[in-house]
Length: 194
Image (cartoon, rainbow, N blue to C red; front, side):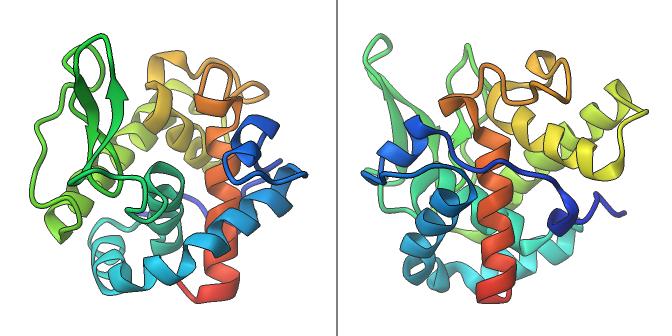
């Protein structure tokens, strides 16, 4: 099953808020590309697993790499595999390279596998595919590429919060989640052969 061509998805790239994480003095696609490149060395150790999982689920490996870059900076921001500390709960909200949401009031998933395992990447990719399918059903008039972008946004904010294509990232982390992930994916595809 084809979920659209990541290279044909339009993107505005990273917002100022996201670019500031790396102290970049610029935004947009250029900032997303810079952040993807920063993570590229660390990403190499996951290449084989990313390619295997991408093939298994029909998802472009470059997209999986981009989500890993955005969510955990290729594992660099994690503490023993955990990320997204929630002081109100006194616990982490997310697990692994793809930051699967384990918060009961969020995604409520049960962490599968080690944080950097193929099993974890399968779980994250299954969640992504489910969101793409939900967006397809919700917006049948959108092109495959628009549905793909909507599914990427839903991975961050849930499909109920994706309301229009024009504001697909409204309410997402940094206000740019799908735009940043798409730009990073395009960089990984063009420059690293994912």
